[in-house]
Image (cartoon, rainbow, N blue to C red; front, top):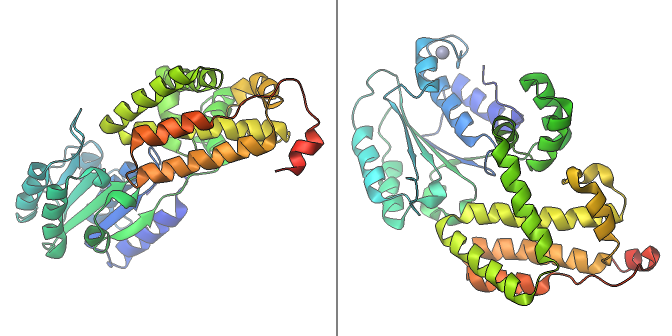
Length: 342
Ligand SMILES: [Zn+2]
């Protein structure tokens, strides 16, 4: 049983490759944070090693040891806590182990979790394994974005994309599969941006939603803040960016989500709103902005994300964003006129 939620295309591809014994030496799973890349990597590690007729069975000794992290032939290489990138030592060790025969399984599997965080030296070392892959070794790389991975590594991996799942599908899954109560399921399915892993994290740990809420409060406060406060925020986020890029991209996603919600509230598309717990505020605030400035700012946020992915100067990119926050107008305007300008 693959039992992977919301990724039928990726599962079908891997399942048929296992069945037909036509596996690549290396895979790269690309997709947003918490979408299930790590879970899928472990399932593939089980599938290539499980001795049962329809692998992965999920219950045999090999499947169980892989799921619990006890199988010594399955190694996960990831960013050390507080580190900015994965160093060459981590990959060199894998290079050495890869040359040894598997101890308790048919196939050694190396899961490189966050391949977009490999240092240049570590990437070059990984390339050596990819250029001459030993027999019975499978490499599974995972990454949020492939832009930071060396093209020579990309060309040697089969790329499997994992896509966000629609909110109603996640809501139904949370209720039926994980027995989450209906109110929380609706909320988490909207907040998670299509990533089931985020929704489950929020279900198991209240501080996840609290943290999200605090970040969103700050974003909303900044719409009425002075330029000094906004620039201080830009400087703070630029510092965070140097430590953990993906955390800042998550924050920028919240920015986009809030302004998108204002646009949706303006057009009365309430079913599509993400921050459904702030419907009253969205209704009230959306009347203070015209459609064109909201739409323009969403485009600028999107452009900033793309530029930051391409190594733009984070402080400068974020300061420009702070200057671009739309100004509310005073008093209500005729909605017809604003909608026509969109
Ligand atoms: Zn099994």
